[in-house]
Amino acid sequence: MVPEVAVLHAWAVAPAHDRTALLLDVLRVSRLDAATVRGALAMAPRLRARNDLLRVRATAELGVTSYLEYIAHTEVFAGGRWAECEWQARIRVATRTLTVDMVHRASRVVVEFDGRRYHSDDRARRRDLERDALLAAMGYTTIRLTFEDITRRPAWCATMVRNAIDRRLADR
Image 1 (cartoon, rainbow, N blue to C red):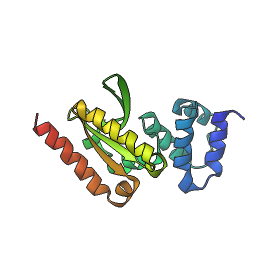
Image 2: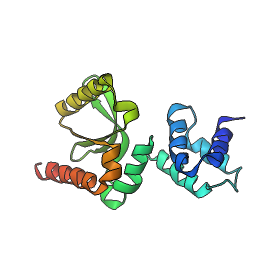
Image 3: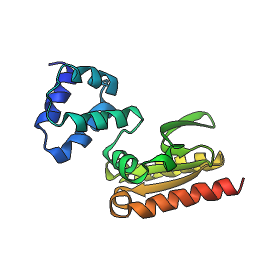
């Protein structure tokens, strides 16, 4: 079975609450991309929860790569007021290029979404601190939000990021 067909099959048989994370995980760790999934969908017009898959695929094409980012993008940082933010954006720092989860370039505010899967051990924490220092040296402020922040206090998250952006823009 070709990978894109396998993904559609997995989507159809997975429990509804697991589908979004499943698709985003496959897109992140495989060579399969959202455009290929779109092509496979043309051959599966009656796929179960097709519209949901289309929505997740479209969000993935915008740069969202994890379930935490999906929630942040679709529920917390959604709408016109966040249109200036880029997802999975590249920022050149010193001799490296970092990919950040979300950035508002005009204000130089970076938002990182830290789920347990990639940010729970000491090595990951040291890597995050180094990234924050590199970004700070280039004039960026980094705000780190956890899964619990995004899911339990979304309004607070939006307010903190908006306040940081507004303050940085006002200080220019």
